[in-house]
Amino acid sequence: MTFDEFLDTQLGSLTRYSRVLSGDRQSAHDLLADTLVAASKRWDKIGQLELPLAYVRRMLTNRHIDLTRRRRTIRWAHKPPADHQLPAVLDDTNAVHQRGFLDGLLRDLPAPQRAALVYRFYLGLSDEEIAKELGMKVGSVRSAISRGLATLRTRTTAQDIRTYLQ
Image (cartoon, rainbow, N blue to C red; front, side, top):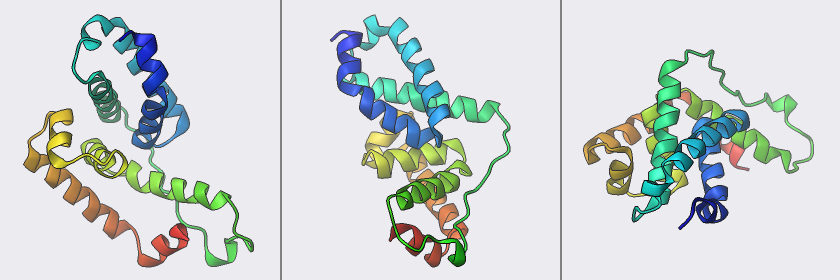
């Protein structure tokens, strides 16, 4: 498989994964572009692998974790609007609020926990598959998911979730 063929079939899924992993469009675009440049330079080896998508996805995850560790940024958390600020008529913008709310929650997690949660709940991978892709032990994956979910539970209320899942 050539690199162009790989991009034709996998660019959409890699773009969505990068967006969920990084938390915003611009960061996702930069992350994906940097990763694809690196992958294209090594495509002779990557293209021969049994699962090149898994390898490139792992490259994306590693690059995201590295960037998160290097940068110290001011983090923001999207707070749900007060009841009096909710729109009188529900429309498609509610999906934007849901995504912003989720991005704000995930952005505050340590990068390995965020990656493990995205692999589990966005990509639907098992603990063993996540461990293999992230180069972690299965127990470490379970711990990262458990701690990440516990942190998310402490930062949300049932009302927050009801508001954004309507």
